[in-house]
Amino acid sequence: MTINWEAFTPWSSLGGGVVIGLAVAALLLLNGKIAGISGVLGGLLRPRSGDFLWRAAFVLGLVAASWIYRLIGPLPALYIESNYFILSVAGVLVGLGTRYGSGCTSGHGVCGLSRLSIRSSVATMIFMTTGFATVYVVRHLVLR
Image (tube, helix red, strand yellow):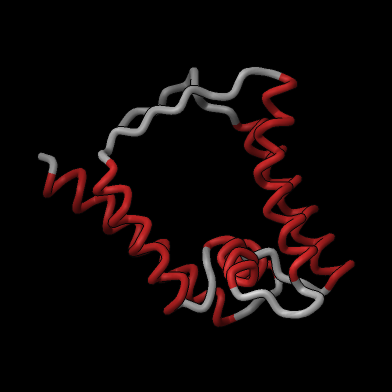
């Protein structure tokens, strides 16, 4: 395994993590809401009274962020090594995982761990272990 040092960006990654942490903390402290993306999006598909506006604003902010970034500088080049079928299957599996796990990486991994939730700790360990195992199997056993 090698690291592409030209693409290694610890400072911008740290900055992004700080911004995510501040946004998650602000949403929880100011609105009492968890910033789990699958839960926010799922709530838009099944809206409840008085719950739609903040969810729509949240998702709009996610989309608008890339457009704002684009005004500052060029977007990073997008390169995906897979085909649409594999991406579709992966998307369905992630969706199923978020339903069975009652949350996603942002809900459990960012918000749940910061709240010291045991359920989120277990969920995060399971999806990280599954992700590591999947990468190992695909790269070292399937695509030899």
